[in-house]
Length: 237
Ligand code: ARG
Ligand code: ZN
Ligand code: CA
Image (cartoon, rainbow, N blue to C red; front, side, top):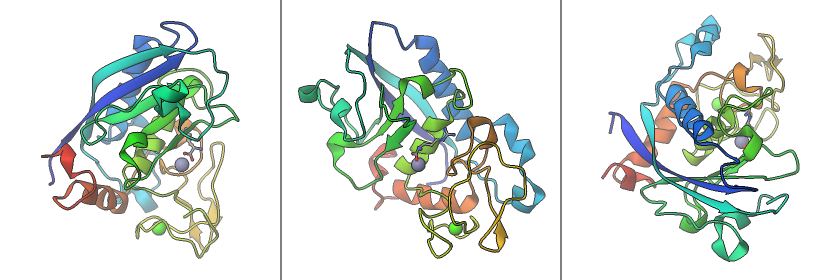
């Protein structure tokens, strides 16, 4: 399937008081996802020539289907999925075969967000974003790109450096090999493993304003999920 895929989004907010995460914050996050997954990030004009022919338009649009809110004084939820369970004080997932579930809560430990790859248990399928990094907030991670990165994982993308040294792969041919993440806002070129790093890829670890592309190869890998035999085919049928 080659056309636009519409992904209904269920936003599960666990907050200290009602409205701590504002409706405007939610709307800004959805707008950023729609920009990034439709090749409308204005920063994309900064992609170096070497990589400009590889820029992909994911043609995925996101639409809020439901917003659930729950009040909790828990200071940090960690990364073991407690926020996804009402028994543990969180909010249960809603129909993950037809919705991207996003949990917004205080994760703690300086963690911006995390995601489950396709193929895991349905009850924990989705992404988790730290309250301060959800939508438009402040600081170098205040432009909503943590969600873009986590949706990348949800769409089967690995980190660009393959989570290892030069021999580790991200299973995408057109992303250059690297030996580790890049941080801050790197100046091109950053050389590793005898090639220039694609630091501006959403699947690196740079600041929000310094990530602004997916590649054709990443797009092909993600799109396979929506084929009739793909793990996320229920979103298109
Ligand atoms: N560390 C997180 C992860 O590996 C997210 C990184 C997001 N980066 C950003 N610039 N917002 O899933
Ligand atoms: Zn990641
Ligand atoms: Ca690669």
